[in-house]
Length: 407
Image (tube, rainbow, N blue to C red):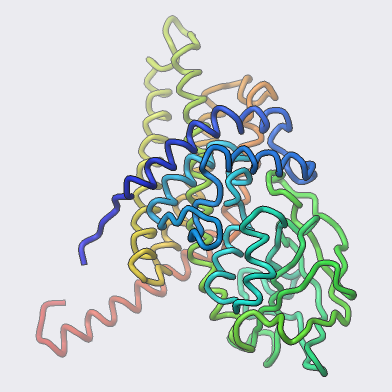
């Protein structure tokens, strides 16, 4: 099958409108709040999303039946990158994590009643959500099989017990998608189930919002305690004991959309550096004429282009019906590290101004650093990439032996 990385004209049009909207409306709100959204007033979110609707760029990723624009993954790569030019752009378009990934999961896995109760208001921006899988050690983290939160069947439903943390968007979320163990023991590869849990359910307590390096996620990163939390039987998301399989529906696309958004922020940082290099004179010339600065700018341009190509390649695979596990892991590992280097170079080029609060580069640097940990640390992705490569090569050798072809 030929690889086609070309987004359609409709997606290009939405991307152009998004570019104008983010630069004309959203960046001013970002500057007003210094890019910090952990305690952002709810009215700010609602106003931004109302403006996005007016601009014709709201909810580009969902089908029209859910109020979206129906753009495929390759088109999303363009639109999400333009939205990510501001820390608040994804929030305005209703494509911020974790809501964007949760919408995709609900559209793919939830039954019709669950979709009406949870997906429709989420897609409309009437509510927010969160995804509760990660646990304090020794529970689930980079290794989800360590899942320790339990769900015990009772009359009419399930009772959940456990502790979750780094639940992004927890403060103010209307519901959580909670991963709990319904069979087996921590360390077993199966036995997980997803539950839709209203955050006002008895037995679910938001213990705290964790202080973190990043601050651009509305609702912060929360820690939940579940103590005999009853969940009705009709709130099981997907089949019992199929939670890890259902998680794959969400994980590959979600890690890719993270890459799209953060690439937009890296582009913004590069633009700041380019403007500074062209306008700042030192040692008798513009910074942009100095060889070391030129190398830094060129390296960032190369990494922006390489990141975009990897994202589009993985997006094409998802659009073609593939799982894209390898291509999204490759993109996640590369882009997470590339955006850090790009923002870091930009700050370096801007010198003392870059360190100051007069620019947003310091905030951008703090935001992109955790991306090398969130959605799987770079080390975990490299481990998985290597394993798949070894397996692929073994299959190629076996095929060559069977067919007497060169290996």
